[in-house]
Image (tube, rainbow, N blue to C red; front, side, top):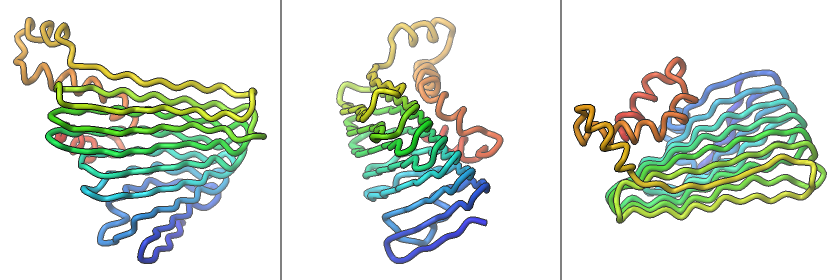
Length: 245
């Protein structure tokens, strides 16, 4: 059974050895003002954690994953604010998957930080983040994969891809790798793209309206993230996200 401890500013969650859980942050924090969330995933435990950035807020999250444990983190940001999530793989064989999505228009401002620190050997991580910005929205995104000294046989990957819908939208995306030994497989990359006139023309030539054409291109940009969330477990949540973009 999951253990929960909380005070005025800190909300602590423990997923015991061998257990599994699915948590939606907005549900577990309903009515609470915690700005810092600490999650401990013990050996052989699994957690799927879905979080949403709050307007004007700053939520700081830390996750510790034990031996052969697994964390699948979904970090969604639809309103201005700051969000930071740090995952530490402290047990051999621990795994982390981070899937992020930020969507902003008008004058939305985002400050997002996602990090995975490999502290134990044979740990694996994958980080995939998608952004969509229109109007005069701005996002400052920083991703980090760090492999500590003495952590061998690790694999860490990160990719961030932002779609800009207007000339006033801007993104500052910085991927970082910090590697303390040679026995690793790690990579990182960032791309920034605009709405493809070629794709829009192709869709319009098939009788699809300009509005629907843009909507289809945007939906295609984020399909990798939503597919990993999955309709089976989060059907209503996926539909809510789709309605926002």
